[in-house]
Image (cartoon, rainbow, N blue to C red; front, side, top):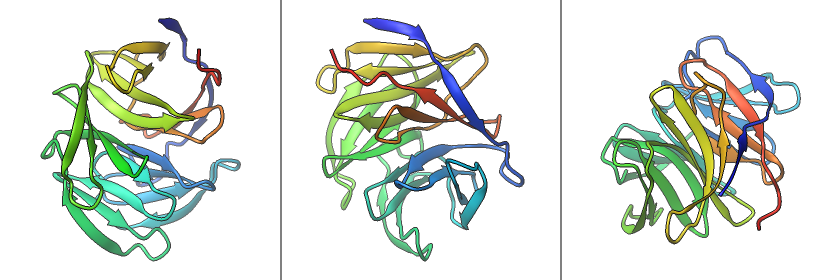
Length: 213
């Protein structure tokens, strides 16, 4: 397993009226983060707030190329990012214990915090397709260039880890600085991983290694 210290290359926030970051996603232009009572968008270059959708946003956030999916308590809402309209809703696999979500290969991938698992589910029905186990609390999930990553946060330690999507084996680990939590994880499709910072109210950017051994 490859292991190194996470290289934080930028921080956004904290932001007014958004004391927590509960999830994070990227729509190709803007970074969206779940702030409890709303979804908020920031410009990745300027770091300025560029949009707000008033919708419950308690945990993971994902983008499928058109819609945003947002965990609110024990449900996953499908949202039109242009109008803010709630289009559909399915049960979350962890029934309220969910943390972290990503879109890939026509599925939603949802972390279940205390059970230390990642579930692949049908985005239309919520039906479980399969689950992957971790040995740490799961606090963020993303796919980056065919690699599955998840964030962890347990005690005062957190990391970002690339895992085998079939077995859950940890292939690479990026250790976050002590006291720096991870609440949400997203790839920008390039070298950046966006990390929610929980109670810090920040979104942090970590440099990702590009090559897959």
